[in-house]
Length: 392
Image (cartoon, rainbow, N blue to C red; front, side, top):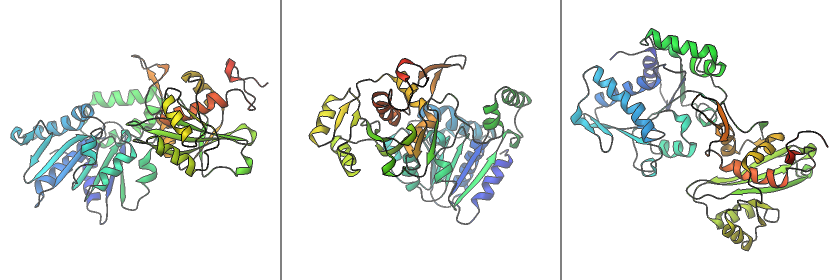
């Protein structure tokens, strides 16, 4: 097999005593994925005992176009691919006594299913942290992660900070097998796009382009209770999709603090009521999605001061949210993650349309109900309801 120095660095990292996580962060075409697949194949080939190796990506289409195609091409290039060893139904390739299985992170039975020896999550930036946690909890040996660092996400705070993690950074210059035309195209794109240059050429953490939520930061905790002017709960109902329960506080000077009380799937109305009661906020208004009148009524019966969001205008709600300086508590991980991912659609030419993508917005919807229905025209001094930013 022809290899790059990315392969060599992963191999050296694998031999470091006590290493658990091998994180491959870098730019486009740096050979991250290819090198990891080479190592996984070699491990399976040389293993004296049966090993189960799992290769996971966001969706099955992503997996087929990415890791599965690369794996086949890699073996075919050296005449190592054996069609008889490939189970095209279950996406399992047998290597000696070991198997390399491919499955997507949107398959719940696989994520929470049987254990494995080695795990590789491809483009882990697209995988929610709870899925990573389930997968790694069922992995006995090493965990490989790779990604292009479009923005900060859970790897930065939860994996790179661990003592058993090794970071392997790479760029296209580490891949000496690229064609001149590929190198020219990469460098040209970097010359016309600053964020592309930062992320895809330098392999450094960028800023997610087209993001919707602006004017926010992260703080350690909420301000002292005696500085709260008003506060509300926002509730976005879900079931298979996450339910989000957000605490929105207006402090002195009109600035806003936001704290995530709960975020997750399979929460029924008693669960929601229990969260709000436990936080001590049953008496304040919980502004809920008006499309769920039955749920609102049930919350009221359970002692929660639940009221419908009379106005659900998404565009206006976003404009109201972005008028305010917003401070998110550091524990509001899912809401912060949505801030980084909630973005506008792009047309065929790559221009942003101004229409939000209906994704990564559960906490944002809960927050928006509060902003639009309780903060659109009060003492902040902004008359956002008529689309102006002038002081009264």
